[in-house]
Length: 276
Length: 302
Image (spheres, each protein chain N blue to C red):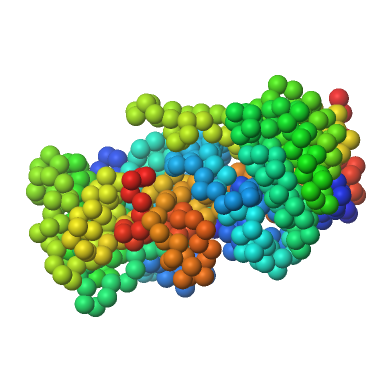
């Protein structure tokens, strides 16, 4: 847990923002960030909002001495303005001091050489995929949104050169329909799917993946308080992961995992989707 | 300068402990804070059998606080002893094992199994649990049921007993007298206050169990009032819990009559909170030339 400050806070659309946070302190450079990890951000010293909020790590940017920000390492998050806290965030200027716990959680696993990565993103769920797109230039990104307002998010990733397909529910950009409609056309025997987005989308992705025997990993979200696996607020039930836990030398007394410390990325086959 | 206090059967090096349910079994926080600087760690409540707890959402934030309905998920007393105690023993911080049950016999058996476990310094009894034999009514709202639980646990263990009171009662002094008469070596309060929040767009409660326990700065005035009331009638040490975020908050409870405090929700905001609270108390004592914390306990001028 450490101090950071806002380097920039740019709006992409009226309620979507990218915030760059100072990540230059000694000791942080050594910390490699795994795509899919997140941060727990405390945005004010006041008691309202009280708790930290989780935000997926979107990018890590190194700037040079010649840049407007000087020589720095900058951790980027993207966020949607949905309530009290994010409204406050949208008003922050460069220099605003925040407190951050990062990186937190387990990110997406490495993709084997012989596997082809399909990334499925719903709206702001695109957050972990910029880092993944940079890591896997042969991957494909399937992006879905309600309308074209969130499609700005895809443009940043398109620039990295990977293949991108878009679906919007109102048909204003790309195909008309859901992002899951794009999956069958992209599948092959080497596919592995990484998904992040609304719970309805993740359920549909998991069902489709299981039916087609495609290995798939999902990034889950639950309301969190502590972010470190202590309060047990963000529990998800898994199916028979007891054996997995025993293999890892952990106590396998039950099949509850914490999204913050065991996840947020999980093997989609293991999740008890009925309860989410 | 002395910060150590006797909390009913044993002494801790400073009056700051972490509250049950907010600090896991200690190890979860080991990279964020220094456990050796705590007076004690009160671990997540233990039951006879492991419990899965409630469906999610289990938490939601409310102004200056939060509601929780975790549902007492825990590994069970046996797994705690086998898998969680070794780490805590290696750290050397005093461990207070919080226990609960749905039947008096459950409480008894959990206490019996913890008796004699190396590294366990005391037991904290959580009576804010539904009594299955009384139609799910909480032990902690009925002085006779609370008395039963404490006196049975008293027979089952030689460890110091701290009984944690619920605030959701008409008269907390009656509860305090009852659990003291039953053999408690100290009394801790308050547990969470029953509360609720609703999502106006979905028109559904924000936590799955509809109601949950409120904690955090929002409850401090209520907690402080109850600690003050209990300290007036108790002859055993009183431990203050409820919205403590800073050394100054802790001092309010100590001045009101608490011998020690527990820091809970603050840990979610800053995992180093309890250590900072202890530091805040120390700084106050230096600034005010107080040589022994005993001078501050119950020193309220009314």
